[in-house]
Length: 125
Image (cartoon, rainbow, N blue to C red; front, side):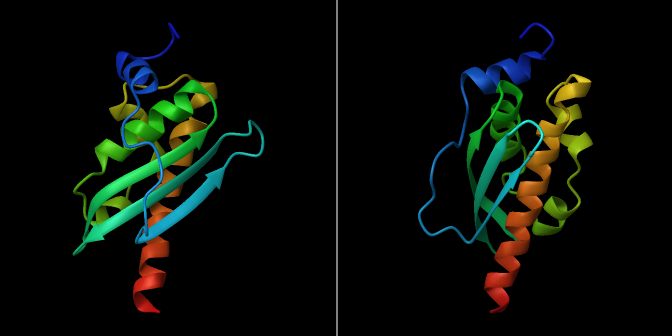
């Protein structure tokens, strides 16, 4: 794990917000067919802000770390802020990722945006 930032190591060794959420307001699952990493995100919304984010990730250490980190990073964000979230923002905020592991931040950003889209679909139904 020497090529990883202290934040990546910390979030892999001590992940936050992992596990199920009862009756989430929105959820999404993303995966990378090349490496097999898979991330499920569940959100609870209060007004137009993320009140809670939970996740379940099966994958490499950086996939687990970026899941944990992103769940803390976006807590309290507006839905519009999540819509604008990029993989680069997650990778930069966590202290960088090796080139061959940037896809982990892509999974986290894609899953969060998809969970917000799912929330909006449910809310408009």
